[in-house]
Image (tube, rainbow, N blue to C red; front, side):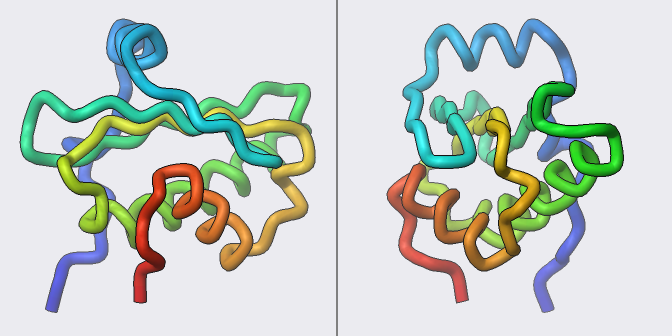
Length: 115
């Protein structure tokens, strides 16, 4: 059985990491997100999420972050080569269901859908 956790090693946490990926990564714009991807230095894909207060109040922002962490967690093994990914939420992202968010994420990263 595969582990279904989201370990600290899979998270982007430092400002310098975010800035480096934003500078060097490739951007894909979707209706509800900007997804920035750069090949990872290590052998593990990592995720960082930015949701500004323009998107909604804190419960709304936290829901979007939980949703996108789950989407990434389910798709991270499909990222080949391993990549550092930043997701920037746009207004309207709070209306997405898991299925729509997963589809948008997969299209932005040109992944085959996870099963």
